[in-house]
Amino acid sequence: MKFKIKKLNDNEKYACSSKAIKSIFKDTDVYINFGGFSRKFNFNSKDTKRPKIKGTVILSAGINIRDYVSEEFYNDANISFYVINDVNYSEEDERTFIGTYLPMLFKWYKSIMERPETALSGIENFLIEWDNGEFKTHCYRYA
Image (cartoon, rainbow, N blue to C red; front, top):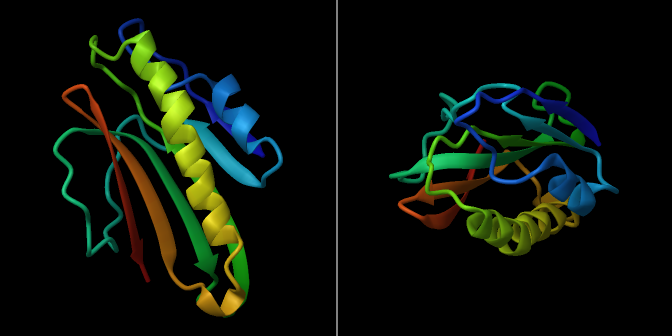
């Protein structure tokens, strides 16, 4: 596991602590970053089948499954946390995120990593959205 954390401003937070995500993904080869790539989520220009997002994406996960130049299979997985500016995101919301959505993310990750190589192609994505006090999940793939 590789890790990067970007410091927050006083009025900001992440969906959970680094300790919470490390405890679930401790035995994996996943790159985890908190605000490291960007403070706000943006879709990749290759994402043609984008889910409709109304709220704020607070976590994105992606697994790049195949090197299209060499055609070799590999699993390059990363999880990115984005800044939450919502004062209504409470400790109870964080507990829900840790107890429900991190295990869901791990189950998604394991389901992809356990597929046979012949069933793998493209980039698998998992998003968690925070919208008016509710969590929403989105899964999609692009080639």
